[in-house]
Length: 108
Image 1: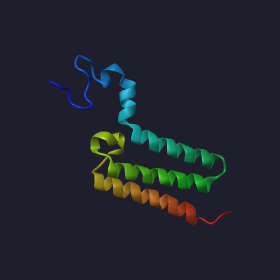
Image 2 (image 1 turned 90 degrees about the vertical axis):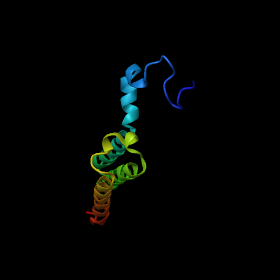
Image 3 (image 1 turned 135 degrees about the vertical axis):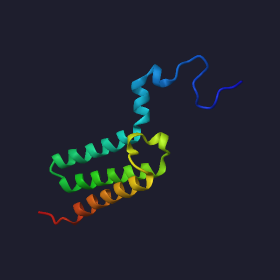
Image 4 (image 1 turned 60 degrees about the vertical axis):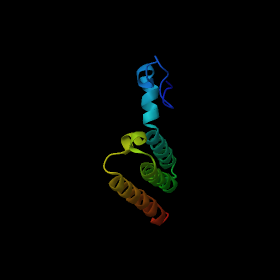
């Protein structure tokens, strides 16, 4: 009998038992990606590039909405909070609002 594709080898414990930190990271990579992009935006804000930083952070929230829309529930991790439609609508609206406000604010 052959094992299912992607399943553990016979007699070998699953990844979450062998390497729990790695397994946790692999389950949460979409959230990690969004946090990294938001962090890049915060660095830009700290470097006095506030408009660019806010646009990057707004795009990170839009990325979260896109990931929530495209990835299945078992792959999305902690980005899944409510139903898919509510998550995509709310995060997309917030991301668009942040980008629009950052771009519409007149320079000083």
